Amino acid sequence: MAGNTYGTIFKLTTFGESHGKAIGGIIDGCPAGLEIDFDAIQRDLDRRKPGQSKIVTQRKEPDTVDFLSGIFEEKTTGTPIGFQIVNTNQKSKDYGHIKDTYRPSHADYTYDKKYGNRDYRGGGRSSARETASRVVAGAIAKQFLKGITFHAFTSAVGDLSMDTPYQELDFNEIEKNDVRCADPAFAKACEEKIKVIKKQGDTIGGVITCVIQNVPIGLGEPVFDKLHAELGKAMLSINAVKGFEYGSGFEGAKMKGSDHNDYFNNDGTTKTNLSGGVQGGISNGMDIYFKVAFKPVATVMQKQETINAAGETVEMQGKGRHDPCVVPRAVPIVEAMAALVIADFVLRDKSVRL
Figure 1 (tube, one colour):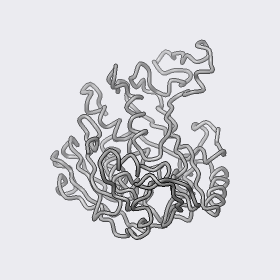
Figure 2 (cartoon, helix red, strand yellow; figure 1 turned 180 degrees about the vertical axis):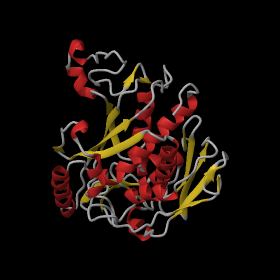
Figure 3 (cartoon, helix red, strand yellow; figure 1 turned 120 degrees about the vertical axis):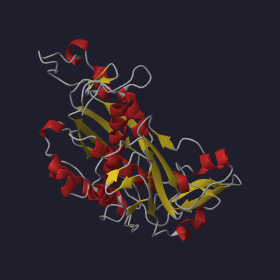
Figure 4 (cartoon, rainbow, N blue to C red; figure 1 turned 120 degrees about the horizontal axis):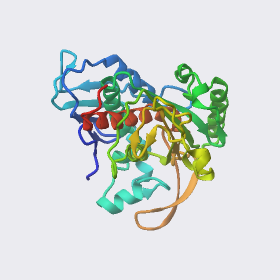
């Protein structure tokens, strides 16, 4: 299997399966001498881990990261940083009923046809558990990117959508509610909706907005490595993501050029920021902001018609512990992937200084 590495200079390779002994990764290209805040890494892992509230999967995993190399006396050495997170709460028997059955909208069928086999225990390599490794690497990238801030938050759950401009929100509110929304009232409405959906044995999707601030001018490598293109690739690599838009996004397609143009101030900043902080594929110093759409989790606790490995039509029903809405736990994953993109571009462009 190829495609397990992301990045050009600041590289992350991940390994492991949902129900294997451990998951983990190797970070290559991280500069030497970076002082590591291990508590900050664990805080981001705790934001992603299962079992943290009543509206997420109740799988209980401490998600404690163990660093194996590349760090000495709490500073990076410049050599590959190896780490692992041991899986401690697998219940593989919950998946015995799908050993020869393809779950609708899962990777079961495509993995089986491509590789000739599949790990049916929680999806194996296709499981979103792999994203814990990304969070570790993203947390280190954030520490390298001193002064650049990443704030992701839930901005929609199902048909509930928050249209308040991010400039009017208090990012300090994000971690004060289980939905991870910067608007407490909207968060409460979303939480109630998720609980209703969960009670129905169903799932629901949503949208995460991410804002990156204090980004230096000059990040991005046209023409094929535009900054927004890499952000899009990074976000679309996250499990369950169905869409990405930055700046004005699809709404910009409805506007006239005279209304959409970001006119300059004398200092090079712009009066508006419909460009989303990126022009010509290069950061312009304004806030970078984008939205990431997540589909409903494919595993539902309702009976569904599907096929088995023999091509026969069969009936199946989800079992075990699953998220009714993946969005709250995906917030730190979006931040992590954004940090990996920015860190890689900073190291690629030697003219940029943090």
